[in-house]
Image 1 (cartoon, rainbow, N blue to C red):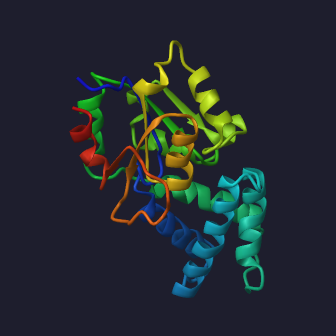
Image 2 (image 1 turned 135 degrees about the vertical axis):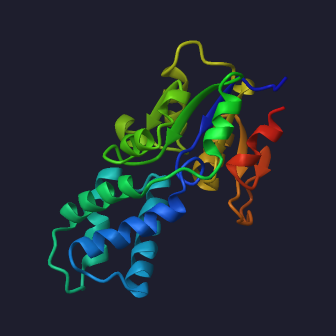
Length: 228
């Protein structure tokens, strides 16, 4: 029997193959306004977008600022006549269309569902996160879905986890709860800050930080093996 009763899953690059969806969605967004998405433009997007999300996780900016500012920054200085906020909505719609699960995710959830309570805890925008999860048809597996943009708190803040524990009836004790995610600075740091065990999904990356998760696995497919 596993020591855990409640599994808290991140969404992006944990359940959802966002490493594939993000670049595909940005490529299709530029193509939709008749702009070729060159390698240089893709790299510009990735660099600027990553900086905004790092600032967000540190609590330095809000999601509303990302919605209003990131594409303004990305498009600035380029000969592209398109409103940044409209482009942001275009991109989020494309992201929903491009989203898919990692191979084997449904099989893993089927294995876990009879034995654990499960929730999704995700930093993301309300316009995209729930539509993406509904598209992949996995919402029925989860007792609750917490989206940072809907509650005004984000991982790794303790307030995000307070909300998560207060959002369901009779949550298990902390020692019986496991946070599962690919984000060292959000999922793993957040779980550690809150006194929870954590499972880092490396997706082939090396952990160069000082954070130590309770478990480390390569992909979601490896999760049942540590829960036996």
